[in-house]
Image (cartoon, rainbow, N blue to C red; front, side, top):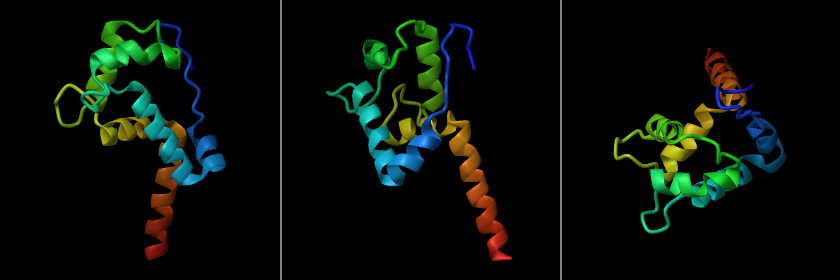
Length: 113
């Protein structure tokens, strides 16, 4: 799928979970967080996201698009992402993970009856 700025998103998260297992996948998410975070603050800030986004192939994103990403994941309103907010955002952005999570929830609900 292509966005307005030409960035193509392909959801590899379900395949990563299958290959790495849940613990290995969570470690990779943590590595992604560390790659983008401001080391002094321990958070992903606008400045750290802008500075490090090229390493993810996102160098063509505008400041507004980067701010939109931060706002979408910023659950506590502090203008930055902590590790939990980052992981939550990554799960929300993965249609495959959301679908498998929904299926697991439905199976658990049906299993109770």
